[in-house]
Amino acid sequence: MNDRPDQDKQPEAGVDAPDAGHDALTAHAASRRTLMLGAVAVSAVVSVRPALAQTAVSVMNCQIPVPANGGGSMIAADGSKVAAGTPGAFPGGRTFRGEEVKNAMRGGTLPGTSYQQNQAYMNYIRRLQAGTSGFTCYASLQMPR
Image 1 (tube, one colour):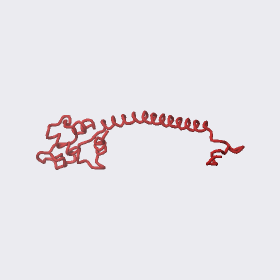
Image 2: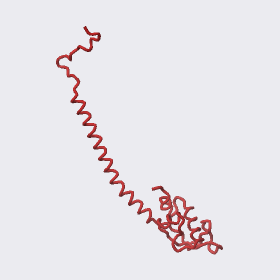
Image 3: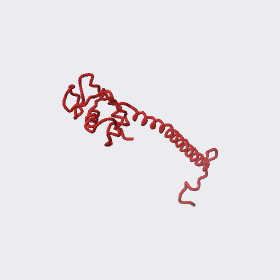
Image 4: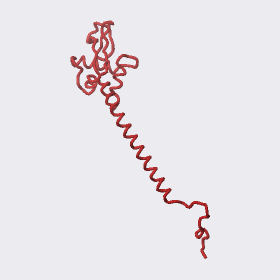
């Protein structure tokens, strides 16, 4: 006789025994699901990359205006707006593309400006706040890519 009565039991008639084919079918379905998820992920990456590239291009083409002195103000060396005629201040009325500002942020100069003008205009741009023309462009230039 056996020490463990459970070992000798046969499955009862009409009751299905565990099927090895069922485990293989389950494993196959899991692999198929994994492959389908992989295909979806690749598709998402392929469709997102062009959108990111397009965004990068639009950021480089956005514009940041340095206000015109028609309003009676100029740009001081610290980037603040000052009254026209203030010694050491520079006239506004310039618009710079995102690419030009990005280059100046990396140590270059804004096109058509002297060293002092470049410093004053860059200080003005750094002081931009939400709601000011050019702020969104400047903020997007600072986003890491």
